Image 1: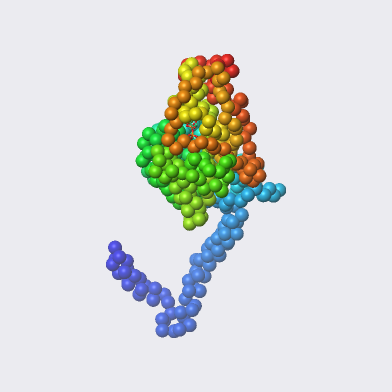
Image 2: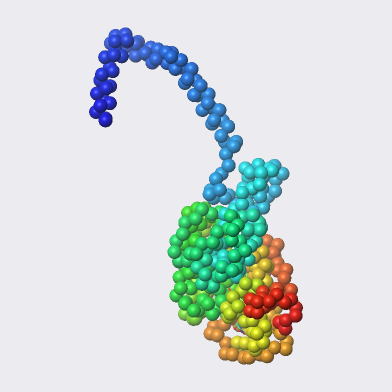
Length: 408
Ligand SMILES: O=c1ccn([C@@H]2O[C@H](COP(=O)(O)OP(=O)(O)O[C@H]3OC[C@@H](O)[C@H](O)[C@H]3O)[C@@H](O)[C@H]2O)c(=O)[nH]1
């Protein structure tokens, strides 16, 4: 084929030469292209082409919109009347997306929630969907349950992917809420190597994804990074008192390493990151038998079983209702301060030996969260517990009796 073309080129040379003045005159080399252009209105076509290109390039910048996959430029909220600012995520201030004309509905964010079928994750998903975002839930269903997110099935803005975060995954997203990890001591001690692998490899994978697609990343860490704290209450600046070789360290040290990775991706790769250290949380959709104190007490009270108190029962925690946590996560905040209370004054109490390395006291200092993000818990135990009891009663007995009629 190539040689054929070359051959034809040779053929045409003499034909062109016949129509042309003699090639040995130098001025001819200048006039020949001009003649060529003037023949058959070629010049006109060239001018029309230039005009079209000019119109195209002049108009293009004013109508361009960044594709949703581009990294968002994150700014703190600064409302300007003529800016198309969108209050995307109260957790971290507001994204100024811009370039979405007034009157045109903004496109929701695409958000991944790892562990989104779990207790906390599913409540977060509810809020994000309600806000108009598209949510992809990644869950391996170790402690998560499809029932927690089933009400979103059929919604085109919701996707559920069975996936374990210890394996890499590539998705085009704007934000990643990384919750995937068993959180109850009973669950995270069940397979400690898997727990630390989830925290280290899983977090690495999700940070790698965040870096690759330019997504903002939020790590749900834990108050357990403080170990058995020597400072009380615990401020964000406290470094903790963790036993590195104890039975809880797969979780405590796993989360500490996850925090380290998160900060290293921020410092080294410029990933936008947030870390929330979550204190004890309760509410509907907790696993019935996940072994944590509130779920145990509620389930035990409903089943008329004695309440199991580990150790001398003098350990303290601060409990927050799940909606407060979700609000806090959405403001990039952590923790809440509620004093431990008795659930059922008449219930029998059964003392059991305490678990190893159980922190003696824990309470977050939320001054910074209050000052900087305007977050504080709204639901106290007396309001929150009945909501949880109602959910547990329905799941244990399959009925819908009012929570206030129970002994809990
Ligand atoms: O039946 C029980 C269960 C627990 N407890 C005690 O209640 C206290 C709270 O225990 P939980 O198991 O509910 O929770 P922990 O505070 O140990 O850990 C939790 O902390 C914060 C979160 O990140 C995690 O969800 C979880 O690890 C402990 O002192 C525990 O010994 C009981 O007295 N009886």
